[in-house]
Image (cartoon, rainbow, N blue to C red; front, top):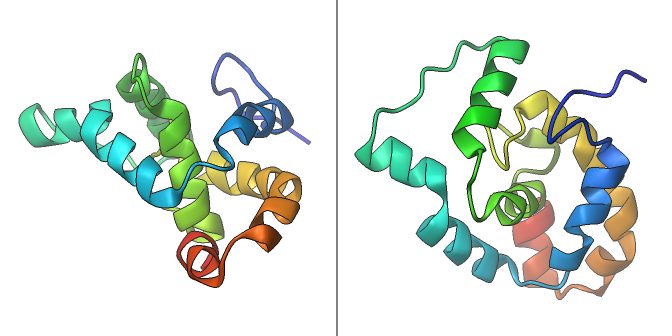
Length: 128
């Protein structure tokens, strides 16, 4: 399988493992962190919004640049994997849609036990 070049060449397995520490953080808390501290929200609100090409490689490079140095990159990625799932769109956590869809499969395998333990409301919000 051809692994994408993201986050210093990490594989999907390595990236999913890195997110394990966020597994028990409530989705609402992740949303608050990303909203309050996300660099992209500042850029698109107060700066010059990025121009997406709709092409995989240029958008991947733009996401990497936009998210570089963001203090909540992992939290952002975790949040989108829960909320967007396989239907993810845009750029979250320095990954484009294709990269996140591929990561989502690995992430889901790692999280099955955590997802099963969630209350029904959390499952609906995080895995719909």
